[in-house]
Image (cartoon, rainbow over all chains, first blue to last red; front, side, top):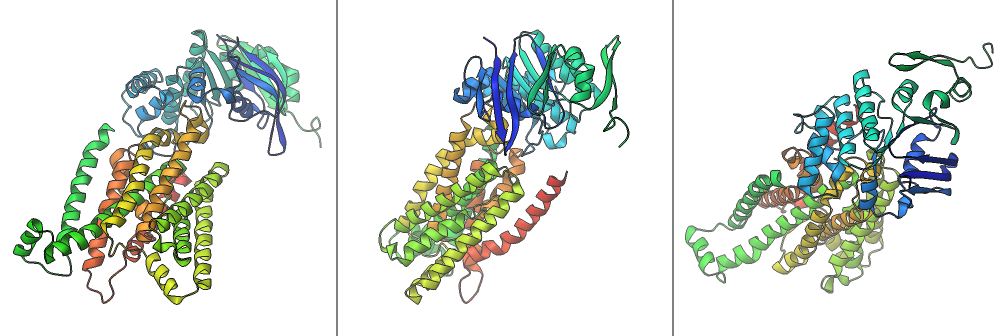
Length: 257
Length: 329
């Protein structure tokens, strides 16, 4: 049974169709990039997967069950979520934030998992630091540690690379890829198509709420998709570090208006 | 809890000392032998002053302060907003409206009726707030809604005055609305301790949920905690505490704002560790404020609610200024 499957999911938000008959299956051992321009429905897909919004049609299956009907503790054991919004309400210490990944576990267990996760994101020694005394990049790592502390097999990650320096972007995606290599399932939305191609096994491309392409990232993000969906005149170049996108913006109306 | 235990012990000790001071000091000067007399013979005149007038009043101030401090900490954690306070958000005003209505229709002769009316009013205010916060989570929007709720409840209370049959009932409600713990008895204290105890128990039950809310509404919902239930219980706890405080002492503003603010740094801003220290700080503040209001030599005794508002309103401005700076970054 797949950790996550969507079948013909349609979701309307505020009168707009955010997801339009979306079907996709996410398998263990894979990291899948969900790509698409702003407003394509990427975040809505993650939220629907978690049962945070109810689809208007179609159904979502989290390990074969309707996520909205799974008791919270069981659902948290199946899927972890890292939203794009990194705002925190209070300047609590890094360890307390990371331990919230295991909020439903016993306090000692939660703390041990939080501490281990902080080590994995390179923040060992900063456990007592308040999150408001950290840089934006450090705070993003604390939140990534919270996600890892869930120890959920399925991780749903919304724009983890946004606003991070290049090294932190690579670290974040390496950690997520390792989770998939260890048999986990990762669904990650990314705007940086180079990161998608380099780190992900598969890409699902959304455009105006519909899945317009899916497959290996370089194939799913072929030139015609880059042109029609992303408005880019672009091609992939092979490099020793993986594929690299060479792109420029398409002029509206083919160059002259 | 570990880190907040020393703070709780220190606050408890300070509260005991302040209460002892409030029982000892007053308008009627007592000599050493009279204090001694009061201790060994509680039915003596000095004993009456200490144990039937000053002590219940001091304990009433402590209980009301604890209610407001707890309610403020709960609301701030629940709404992720350092400006949240039962007074600012209108929960006190809806509680006061409930109580005012019950007084005007003559229910004050029924034991517990005013208290229950205040609890119901505060409960309705709390539910309205949370319904609004679920839809518009931005802190600024919520404060504005709170102002509207507070103004509306105030307007309806004014209407109650307007249509009140007798000027005596009006004067009674108005004097009570200004906020005071004057002439409170042990029975009044008992009526407030019960909802406070229930609110504390609920608050301790929901504290992990408040901590999870630090991450934001949606992420908290994925942490495995039963957030919907915890949030509802937090509102119930805040409304119980606010309603109990309003029923006992009328509207006393800003304690719910100031108490969490004073102790927040000591618990590293952790909303789950803030609850008991905030309740203790609120109790301490109100015992000291009431003692000061009693001892200030004025012709008419200063009303406790007037006194706390005079100190609390500038503090609200200060907190708002600091919060606004943090929202900008």
